[in-house]
Amino acid sequence: MVSESANARSLPWPHPTARRPVTLAAWLTPPALVICGLALVNAVDPRIPGNYPPCLFLFVTGCYCPGCGTLRALHSLLHGDLRSALGYNALTVALLPILGAAYCYGVAHAVGRPAIPALRVSQRAAWAALVVVLAFWALRNIPVSPLSALAP
Amino acid sequence: MSGSNHTLNLILAIVVTVLCCLPLGIVAIVFAAIGMSRQGSGDYAGAESAARTARICIWISFGLGLAILAIYVLFFLLLGIGTAILGF
Image (cartoon, rainbow over the protein chains, first blue to last red):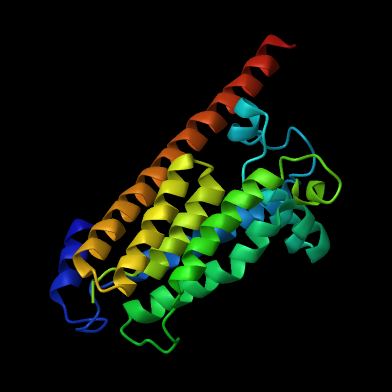
C-alpha cells in the first residue's frame, strides 16, 4: 500500500496540475462505505426501537441532535417516501444532494478535469448555513406544534 | 488566492456537525466561514490559517465521532451478548 502510493506520487497521472493524485481506491472508498451502510439500513428497519443503539447525544442529554432521525430518513428515502424522510430529518435530506455534488466536484477536480463548474458559496451563505444548523438544532427540541414537525 | 477550498471545508464542517453531533463541528463551521470572509476581503494568509483550523476541527470531529460510535456500538453489542448469556 505504501509503495503503491509512493509510486502514484511520482507518476504524472491523473494530471500534472492535480494537487495530489487520488488513487482509484480512494475514490471508491466513500461510495462503497455508503452503499454498505444503505444496504444495512435497508435490511434492518431503524424505525423499530432496539434495532440500532439510540443517538449518543440523545441518550446522554435527552435532547435531539441535528443528526437525530438520519437513519430513519435514509430508510424512508430508500423506500421512496420523501415526505416521511423530511419528517424524520429535513436537514439530512437537504444535505444529501449537496454532499453528492461535493463528491462529484472533488473527483472531477482530482482527475484534473473540472467538467463540473466549481462549487462556490458566498460568504453570506456560509454564515447562513451556520445559523440554519444551529436553528435546526434548537428548534427541533421545542415541543410546540409547528416546531415539533422538525423533531424526528 | 489562498490554496484552500473554503467551500469544501464548509460542506464537510456541516456534514461532521450533523453526523457526528459534536459541538466541535460548530467550531469548524465558524472557522470555515471566517476563512471565506477573509478570502473575500483579500486577507489570504488569514484565510489560509482559518481554513487550517477548520480542517483540524473537521478531522478531530470525524475521528472522535468514529471512535465514540465504535465504542458505543461495541458497548451495546456486549450488553446484548451479556444479557443473552445471563438469560435476563
